[in-house]
Amino acid sequence: MDARGQLRPLFARPRFAILYASRLTSQASDGIFQACLVGYVLFSPQRATSPGTIAVSLAIVLLPFSVIGPFTGIILDRVARQRALVVSSVIRAGLLIVLAALIAADHTGVDFYVAALTTVSVSRFVNAALSACLPVVVPSSDEKALVTANALTTTSGTIATLLGAGLGSGVRGLIGGDDRHLAIVAGLAAVSYLAAALTAARAGRADFGPLEPKPWDAALGQVREVAVELMAGGRHLWNRRPARDALAALTAFRVFFGLVFIGTVLLFRNGFHGSLSGLTGLATVVTGGGVGTIAAAFATPRVTRRLSKRTWITITFVASGIVIVALGVPFSPVLFVLASSVLGFTATASKICVDTFVQEETEDAYRGRAFALYDLLFNVAYVAAAAAGALVLPASGRSEAMIIVIGLGFAVSGLLYYRLSARPAGPTPVPASEPGTPVEV
Image (cartoon, rainbow, N blue to C red; front, side, top):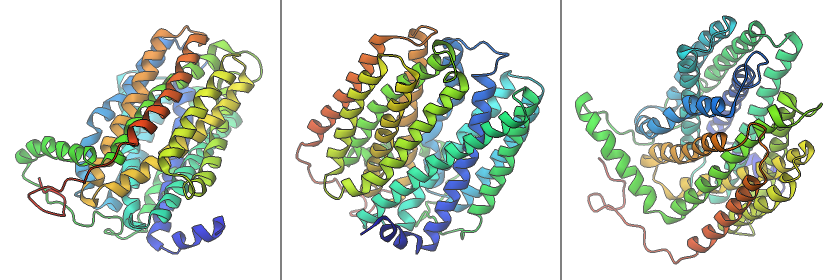
């Protein structure tokens, strides 16, 4: 069956089509916002950005939500996920208006970082919601359709983010790069988030789940239930070994990917010179990663019909380890762009497989918490590694030793995953309190 034949049944599902459009509009808006934030914080000529400053910026903007992220899963298992998508996009639009005012005033104080942190946090909540919605509109019992849906949505979302970032950067280039013009880009992101809210509003309130909403307890009781439910969600994932092993492998990959990210930012800001440097060079690297993402989306559903998802994850990890050393050590901007395509391919191919493992292995009543925990592992590993790398790398970003460590890290992570996941799986435990169904906590 050709690609069109695989996609036609998906789009024949009206709820999938609306969810897909919601992802595209939301992630395109994220791209516009990210172009504004990166240009203002990391590549503004008025601001000197040291490795330590980058580390602090990353930690402030990304880590707090990673810590509280699992709590959002409890919300996603109780409220209408369609309503969560609508309200979240309206909130992001309001926050971008605040950020536009702060940028126009050339302000980077605590209030700026709080607004940026909140915007990023809400966007990550939306991404967790979108992932939790997918098995409702494409049943997890249909593995082939779910792999294809994950490939399509993951890749299309990444492309939408890249296009949004390109739009934001293009508008900035046309109208100028000073703070007042960046404020206009922030305003454009606000309008785009409103469009995302209108897109999600086309769905019915119950169209995206949860299928059996869990009841809200009293406020005081809910404080205790949060910890209990997170433990239940963690046990649920832990007892599903295919999902657990795949999450562990992807977390390891994100550690080394975070090191690549911070080294790349430093190289294109301080280490490389010429036409392919600075924000233009970094945008080219991001584009290269996008090319890899598109290729992975086309390849992964086809390959995983012939190879297991486990084997495909291992192959891509090992290949990334070899490529990052071969293309990274010469410290050439062009070779870094080529390497970014391979890493983009691996990041997307592995995420499609891991998303599918988690969706297949978890009950719907646990999916919100499962993807919130997934977000926790995914982003804490990435940000912590990037922040640590910023503190140990030179300001130029040039370190042959770090490139070799990263290459070995990718390859060893893949081989360990293949070996550990080959162990015979025991029976999936069923909670004694409710045989055959998720535990109510």
